[in-house]
Length: 255
Image (cartoon, rainbow, N blue to C red; front, side, top):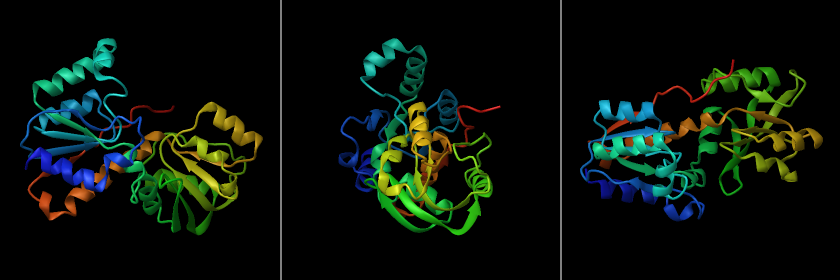
């Protein structure tokens, strides 16, 4: 299948115009025009590139950009990045990024996380970047955290500022990625925030203002991989493509 046709379809589902203006999305490296095998991943690590090479991948679709800034300047400063680019260019592998245009999509990453948790009364908020929803059945905090870890296959520790493990938990705000600023919104203070990643000043603010937060890790955005694969599989137009999901371990661990 022609690369241009694939990109046109993806742009219909995840319009470039819907992303943040300062975001780095779309075609970041141009390779071959004829596509047989597509590799979908959250990040483009050296291990991802090695697997893409071994599986003769023609197109990598990632959520997080390979370049956060001006490409040539970044390559000059980062030898590892340069080695990634050299490998991809040598084998004519395309790199296409769907970042905040996936976050703002009606079927966003946060929405997909809410579906995975089998929540009910799901309502999108904050331009679709987050959702407000309820657990079908109230759980204690400790049981809910176990449920999160099981649902998203989280092997690392989960951080929270909630001191009571038996706190009844039902009303939730689900926000993927680095969505810590959402805790400043007073409209949602009656809910527990389940957020991918918070900065230290967010924790200070949350503690001072009695905002209940659970941080599940930025890597839980890897539900993006299933989102994109499901999009391809649901469209007969792509039936001849081979779609590979990245199964790489998370990029960090806690001990």
